[in-house]
Length: 422
Image (cartoon, rainbow, N blue to C red; front, top):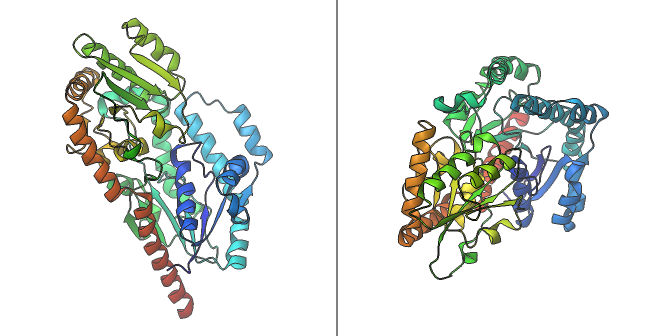
């Protein structure tokens, strides 16, 4: 198995960018740490970060540059709506893939690559240009197909709703025209929801379930947790400050228990909603209880969470939710919406899941959950310990790469058998 030669292809591979960009970064990191012959091909926007992160691997890091069309796209496209942002990113990604494809074909020949792995984009409908490369291709794990809960569908305007329906209707035809997924040796999906969201034109491709996210236990360890004496309970939110993350509901929930419960909220993240959320906290008299820290890097986040008592993620459209796994690894109980990724990771043994019935119900349920945790250090300790054990057993990046190596070997073997037969 260790003789496999793997090429990871992605637009971005970055811890600083967060989100799905962390996935190819960690695949490459763990593979090289184990001595597996691996290369990483991505965009040179993050070349500096990768060369700093992997100084001994510079000959295994390959990059492509923006075309003038991509530069123009980012300059002239309005990014005020989710659809405009998604469309711009999709077009830019396909231009990057067009530049990567010839490089990949050459690398397959020169480095005798056994498997090409394309872990992002995680969208199940995004087409791929990674086909007919001379080596088998694995795509994923993908994660998507998630709409807002019915009571919160208004968060997407009518233009967005119509646009996304149109995109999904066209996805099968687009994936026929650009057949990377149709010709892949294996498609990986994070859950059944994502499997159902795959275009009909890829229905014949072998598909397996594998969790999308993982957690770096060397960085997110409960050993870093504070052992201070009992004090006021500290809750934290981590993520972008955008409307679908539900931070406004979290602030209102804290306001409901402020008189009876000595608790605070640390908000780690930035975004277009920050000013309005700060104003909301002030309007409830929570100026001293809600602290906005702005963006915090992955390198600093474990330290910043070391004195936190629980994470709260009231997100309404969270396909993944890596921050939930990171909190679990740190031994933090988690309160989250029972919707999307957090509902895949959490259960009653390690956190509290809030049904997204409607806004009023969520605020009341968040208040109850925060009050219970604030008043019971023993409950926080029990839930946190269970979450830590679950993260170590199921979401450790090392275990995830164990499984990927099995899949690499499987598709490489099948590809070799096919070549012999031909």
